[in-house]
Length: 345
Image (cartoon, rainbow, N blue to C red):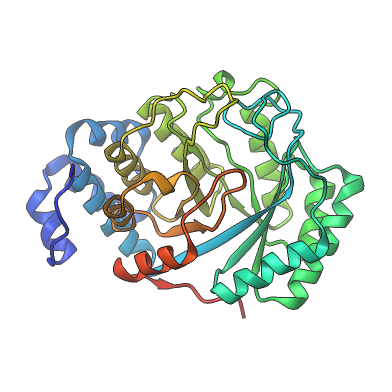
């Protein structure tokens, strides 16, 4: 294993024993002010320190700015396939041939049953996610109706992920009870044009700014392992932080047959641990959410990440790929010393 076995020592003792001056100084600054380090500093940390040293420091940051609650969420694919965009990683693009299921707006009862199931499992947040560049104004009422029904029947914190919406659609969702909007940057501004040509990084930032302007929180992260450099990966973390994200999902590329990235080599588990730890140093006050792609990781690696900066989890199926079971996740949380955040009152 690339990192040490877990030992029953206080985190402070482990960090003080292993840490040299540069890492200690960066950690002290983050603990004091919560502003996060620069991309240049994160790159230097990556070059100079082991995965365990970085993860131990990141866990101390998580403990300073958060608590021992794990923030849980789940998503439902509310419109699938036939997307006009050419994102190279995505199974739902009509530019690729992946055999993904295609359907229009999810049936109301199907969405309600998914929400009820999440409530039974104690999952805190729930989002409808749609394929396509954006949900058209003519369709937004259908989704708003579903959100109002879910809001009446469950205590779930409602989120939405519906593409590059404008002010009108975002206001309607907010009025229907949606509190958080999800719009991934996917990768850094410097790498995005290599992966998508039908919309831009700036388009995404514009939607994020509009969502915040109507009073929504923003969930904004991306996918790692799409051929980007570590610097570009860390630029993504800084860009999401600076865009005002309160939650940063980290997805690991699952190369899907039929997409242009189907033959992309998998990044190592050590690199994934390093990435999560450095994201925490860059964005100390954000929920750092382990999302899609984690099914391939070992139990020890997932636990190392929960004790290395990560404090949120996307649970259940991940749109076109399969996630870990809710029961497995709950055991992992307890083993890592977390308690589940309560449902909304």
